[in-house]
Image 1: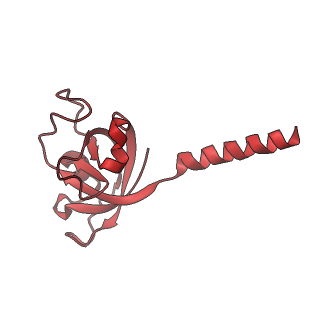
Image 2: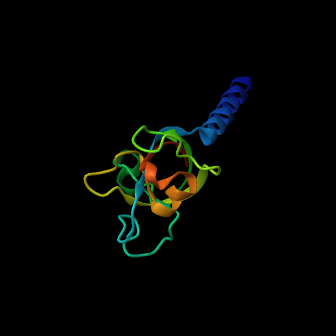
Length: 130
């Protein structure tokens, strides 16, 4: 039985670590209109939304999931210090990046991007987690 307790303990630790882990990538800005979307068609899901690149989209499995997104810095494509004083937001994935696809990992609505970074930046370094 001690082996079972150790195994159970390892599983608990692994699940806790996966909850708190985040990925790093690029966030870009998506100008309206946001409809139709690949996940919800013409249903309006508000403005705190994002489109995912094909890797994150996973054939629609990520539709309706919430991601916490934090601006961590500039991409050297625009504004050198784009992050705002409130650099973290939560967005719902509502779409797949439109062709030819994202220039990053998440294409944030103009409204959500503006909350965490200067929209003139166009693209930012982000960390994100579900």
